[in-house]
Structure formats: C-alpha cells, structure tokens
Length: 127
Image (cartoon, rainbow, N blue to C red; front, top):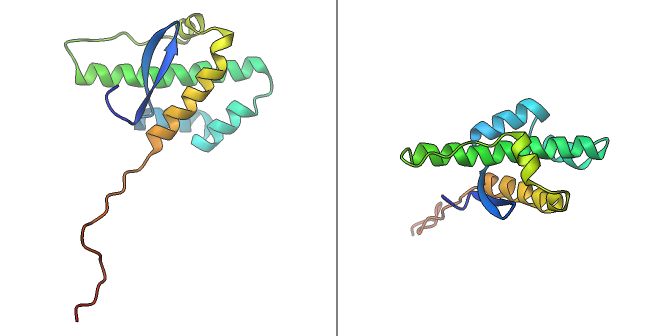
C-alpha cells in the first residue's frame, strides 16, 4: 500500500489497494449525495440485489482509485482497472461481509485528518 489512507480489499486471494480519493468522493457525492448517504444506502437498500449492486459499484470505484494512483506514481508499472463485472466474478457471496468491512475501512482511512501539535503552547502570557 502507498500509505495509511488506503486499505486492502482481497478478492480471490489477491490484494487490491482501495483508496478514497477526492475523485472517488466526487463520484460518491454525485451518486448518493455524500458519504453519510452512501452508508445509509448500503445498509438500508430495498433488497439484497440492490445492496449487492451498490457494493459492487463502490468497491470497484475504490479499487480503481488505487489502480489510478499506482499508475500515476509508477508509470513504468501500469495496472489495468477492474470492471464491475470482473469484481462480481472475483467476489463470492461469502466475501460480501468482508467487502462491506473493507469499504468501511477505506472510507474511515480516507477520511482521517492529521492534526499536528506545536511544541510551544499558544496564547501564553509572558510575565
């Protein structure tokens, strides 16, 4: 993995780096209205087929963001993006719970904010 803001999604024993990038966030916002609404859609889908479709779209998006980032950082070692159909073939129904956890992990890791502390406290009175 390139950094701690990504997560690994395993399909058929192969690890794929998944990334919540700004581009992925834009696509999620277009489709759902935002990250919170995405979570609601995944957990409150009207039926299992809809939930699977949404999870496939999302996991494909996140994996392909990892592929695109890899390709930008390593132009000499290009990887091919996956299609939703390929993800559907690589993932088994038994993988679904793990994929859902991985999606959550990617979103949490991608949403982390770094806070740096300063050595000297602010707003002190010299006296």
